Picture 1: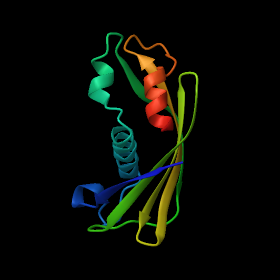
Picture 2: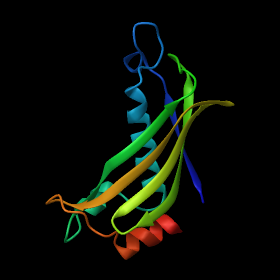
Picture 3: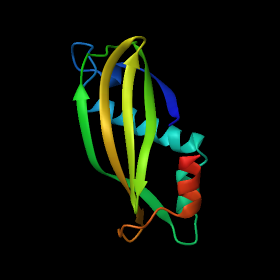
Length: 132
């Protein structure tokens, strides 16, 4: 499986009073990594919404593990891999690295949804883009 990478610089707004990244900020970094991985695969959120039957991805399950702290001014790399798809579900593995140090990881399950909030099987063209 292809691993997609996305660079993230740590700003003051990402940290707590001690200059260490606040745990909830990592969720934004993982989200950006997923969005950029989709984009690199040819899947764009705006195009999904513009379809005749609009759809979107929503995270329905995420397991995270924090291994080492990141700090203000660090340059991190979010690594994202699509690990599978079944029906309306998409599975991803993500890691955040600072050079040779693993900062954290996440296992993510996202669901393809219609705008009415009902699960929808991944369209064949989206599946092909993510599998390719």
